[in-house]
Length: 283
Image 1 (tube, rainbow, N blue to C red):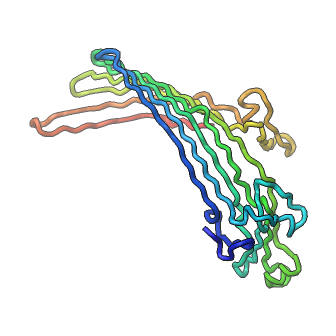
Image 2 (tube, rainbow, N blue to C red):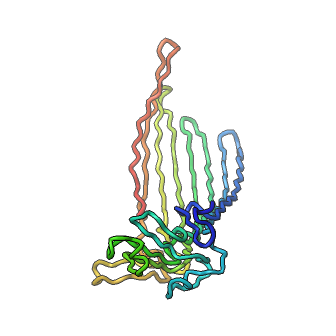
Image 3 (spheres, rainbow, N blue to C red):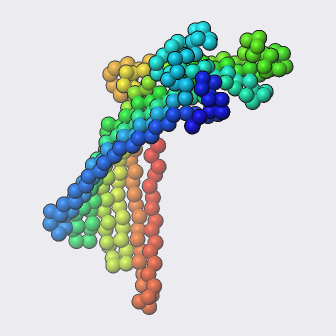
């Protein structure tokens, strides 16, 4: 999707313009096995990977932002083209949106297995689920080629401020690719207990553990308000030292429900269910 000005000047209004690529690949395989009439197992394995890439149209041009504003590094991942130059009071600009280029490559494996056992008045279910590894490679920083904003702050005319080089706001961000990683595991047990022909109790318990996000090279920092304004940096070791967050290990979700069925004149059936399941916030 070309900008209004095309070429080096571009003129794309937002980061949904330019060269866009979206590629998605996935597969799933399942196996349901009946051991005997009262025992059944259901297994599912899956994988998904997406690749989203957006580049400004001048990305492949030889002209780089450093040729127009000194101090802007020439980084291959940020590509070519002008820095974004905005004249805000006139709603005019040159260059490409500050969030181009950007790239995201999320992928994950998923495993689910459920065993169902029927025993008299009880219908038992046991299951485990895991999403691991979950990984997202992404580059999504603003103004990796720099940006200049002229607001008519000094001369009361944005173009005049631009000619004099009197910018109201400037921005420049390092270009980096983040390697974000996490995983999730869960297990549950459930009992559908038919106490009476008209009453069934549904009892269950689920447990989940989700890791806080980590970075493949431990490039994470956190602000410590009790450390005199200091930053704490991730380092190899425990999950807490890599994520800079204490993992939550108490995510239990109990479930209690009842199913009441009554019949009137052999022609009316109604079901009522009451469920209690506390929410479990992931830290």
